[in-house]
Length: 169
Image (cartoon, rainbow, N blue to C red; front, side, top):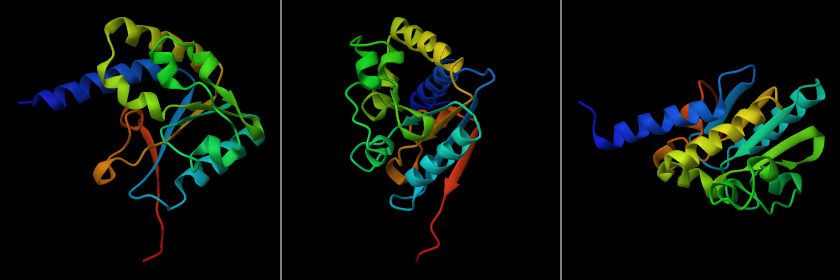
């Protein structure tokens, strides 16, 4: 018997799977059990290496602050997933071009809002992600480290995950 939270998590994950698609795009989440182990640096390095090989790469960044992907790459962001959710811009407009051929979708402000979307808002995002799906070969998710090390909202919907660990004690 599922609790209400488990049922909501299941429905949310299914909606996000539809948003992110199951086409030719490779979806990979990068997460860590704690902050400060180099997860974001790993995402940037993986994205740059894939781009150097000719792949089109989008990084969905679930993290806030200057230590996120955009901040570390020196990309100023003015639109994000939250702007898309509130109808300020289209999803394509929120994707920023960064160095090394890496595209970035700042998603920290909007990731938490995904749980309360109306059906119409979900469909609009699904359509937007469907268009993005055709533009990128790889989508890397720089997962937010949640409470107790639980993954961020996008990461729970992706089948492949890389876990970054630190050997420091």
